[in-house]
Image 1 (cartoon, rainbow, N blue to C red):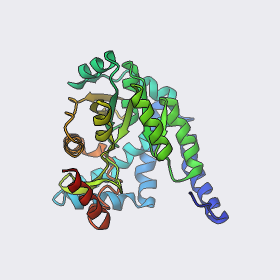
Image 2: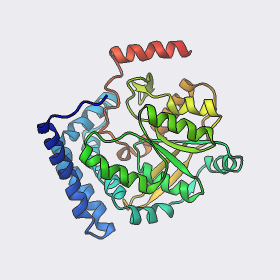
Image 3: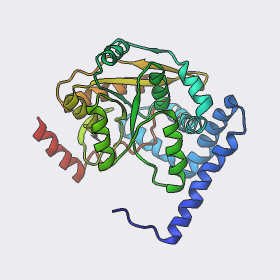
Image 4: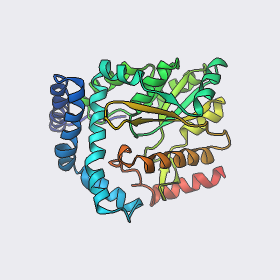
Length: 309
């Protein structure tokens, strides 16, 4: 059961939530082509240094890419938060953003498999990541005729989470909140032949340690397990942001072969790594992706991994 916050903490969370929402609401007064670079600049130049994100980006890069030149690090410290800020203001600009994302070209070897699965009423699980724009993937695939549910993790700040969840829901339904109830709803959705979008590049405390950019990272096997359970098409799709910062290119890769959950999840990692190396500034290097890659949680995950193999 979730513990109640004390009044002081609740007040601090409200202040923080309103502080996060204020620049987004102000930015919405600007034309769309100006509000995205404005919020991108604000996130990169003001919010990221104050929140400690610059240090986290640097630490993550040092962990997995220790030989990266300083000039590249400095570039990523600016461009990664810029992309994160653009993602956020896009979510809070649903009409304009959806109009853009609907026009995004969708291509790649997975597109034919996607349409074949739809024709057979076979469940589809779209796997993507905090890369480029996951929301552009959602909108573009809905435009392809896919009714797409989404599995999501709520924000910790309740004041910010309410409008955030509302904005997420405006793009596609149904939505399944992380947790026991949401998981049960998601399973019923897939069992009925529904389709699902899920992000797989999160640190999962109940996951298993798999290789991600050369280092062990606790990784969820959820998407692969569900694909095996429901004989679903497991399709990696990436929303790559265009050079103009406003548009997208949607790449549907070849489906992941249904073998075993560990092999399948590692293959998803390998595919994502290739995209990250091709577009370094578009992955969310602010994540604490490797924080539990070693230690007690990793040891527990390793035992789980050994049982599966």
